Image (tube, rainbow, N blue to C red):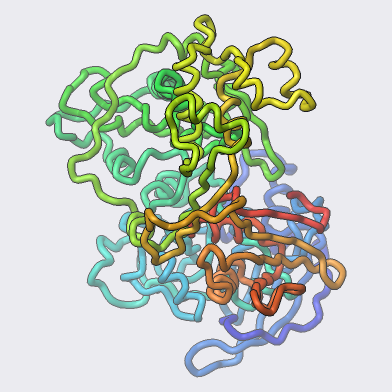
Length: 616
């Protein structure tokens, strides 16, 4: 309906009495109730239709015969956005004789307002061209009970299963479909989607959230479980195959008997034990020297927790044939309910130290490898890998040369040469960071420099002392005491080496004879700046060394960010070595970083500068 820009008349303030009347009607139409008093009813009205809303008349065309449709769009700002002073967003639309329908902006603030159906990302791209959702394009069954013929529904993708990306009206009783493969016909008539002209109202489209918190069920389908079933990326899960098993409570595994559902205490204990096991294992094997801090919360869980969760046989009745991880072990089923609260408990237990960065990202800044419980932890048998271990959805991309691979290498130089020579390592060879850290570990063992009472500390000899700088305050104390933390020496040795790098571009094979280039690996620059007053743009340059086509990048970001994107020659670059710059409308730092990460370019190869004064 809004593929083409509608003719919208100037907006006018909506009278308070009209706003309350419309909001009350919406509460009635969508069967919304509140058990609280008038204050909660007022809050509910404000969530649906905030105060100081505007309304504007519009005309557009719809249908194959391009019939003229007249209607009204209601625009407003939710109070929690910049104190109610953010961008005006279209919240509701009434078109022709149809009932009012919410925009995706409203659904992101009221995620349980409509039943949510799911489709695959390639199908959604078709919806963005104005197509309707056909039955084979649905993911399911089961489907929400509210997805009946003539009812409004939201549409989300399997990649972001909690984020409504379109709104439509069911053409059939979707809730009654027993299968979709091989079926024909239209399932949902789409009336609005991310990227249409209503979404872009005012010329400043909003940013699509990565996820939307949905604490309750929508229809008969629990959204959190649906998110797992649909393959949404989540650090709370273990793997897609185990999540599928979890849904079938009471299903049998290879052991031939039902797997008992664990209680909350058992799940809490399992996650804590897995963490202790991970710390114990990494410390005993020396792998802890390869853990570079700070580490993201998702990386901590995927590295030090999930691989150490116990199998189903670990729990009563101890069926030894049930060798895969217990299907109840999901962090959402702990008493913590989410990873953030789980980390708070670990910090309270003095196992880790965390820091919350701007934007709410939790990172682990220190790990207590020497914790008494971790040191004395008694290991248990770990789950066995499935016999028909299937590759994940990204396996083909990762293995088929579709990703960038940046190899950082180091060559001993100056003070570092003595350590490499002492352990018999070649001083003209190139080493990865992990190999450099392994050499320092070998040197410590060879020279017996580890403190026997505290393995985290090592004694400084003249060779190690040469790696430290007495002008640096952080190095002055170790030089004075003659002891230093073991996990810092790896970085000291790396800094004493000369950096080199190799970039394996997408579609190229890893050549073992490739000659490393001197210097640090190149970095992609992301610059956020203001233009023409309040308008923010995101400029990206330096992607060519990583095998990324700037034009292809601009095209994909244009779809992802639902805004304009352009490519031009970087100002000031040499004509002999031209560098292209991608400019995207809006503050799109996160979208750009995600695009780069999917192609194998990690955060350490990205340089970000925000000159807008906003959160970085």
